[in-house]
Image (cartoon, rainbow, N blue to C red):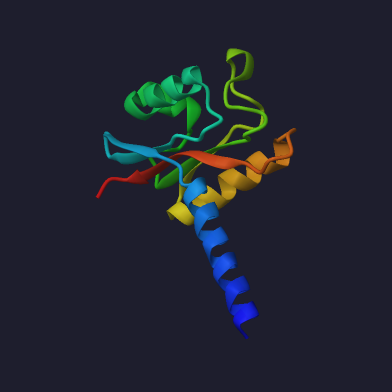
Length: 134
């Protein structure tokens, strides 16, 4: 019994440590009638983070990178292996989905679209989430 308890405690501690290691810092802002969250994924380069910060603060940039972001919920997903802006242009796998009725749908659809196009092994992750302010 004690052997199984020890294994259970070790497993629980391992999962807690893994969860803590996966925490990604975020930045939030408001642009017009939208609330925007930037996920500072560790693979993003300084140039990519700078570009995403412009996207979250400039309505014209947001409209270019995330179409339909002013209509409902939107998300932008990127493959960690492909990157966001390799060679200075968005990777084919960097996919934005907008105009959806809720955050979960936007995230799910953006991740699925990105995963279909990614060349790398690692699953896509969210880098931007856009929601109606309020």
